[in-house]
Length: 136
Image 1 (cartoon, rainbow, N blue to C red):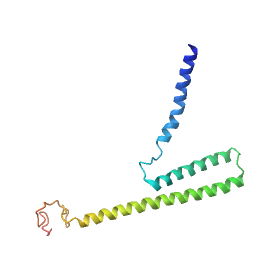
Image 2: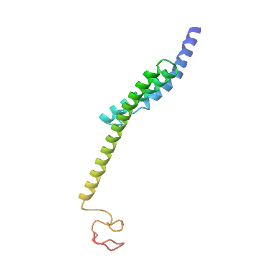
Image 3: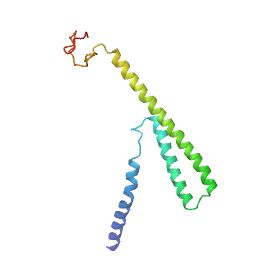
Image 4: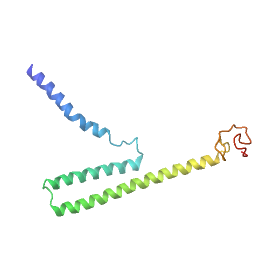
């Protein structure tokens, strides 16, 4: 009977201790949120940042010499900066293309629903704006 109680307490403790680690992993970016290459870059960024944190901790604990730490720290920071720059370029390029495509679609649509002059809503059959009188 004591063994069952002990196993139950052990299982409850393991779940209680392990749950925060599982929640942290679920907050990371998933493949469904960010497409293809961008997901890979985000993953690489998280790995490099994690490595930097571990390396700084090891240095503070005296496991890494100052010379080694300086070299590794510089290399990983440079790599992180390159990855972040690539991510930003990819995001900016994608958003600019989306905006340009939306503008092209709008300009190609002959039946606009608002007056170009004052912005008042109009009906499909209107030839003049009911607010400012401008030709539609």
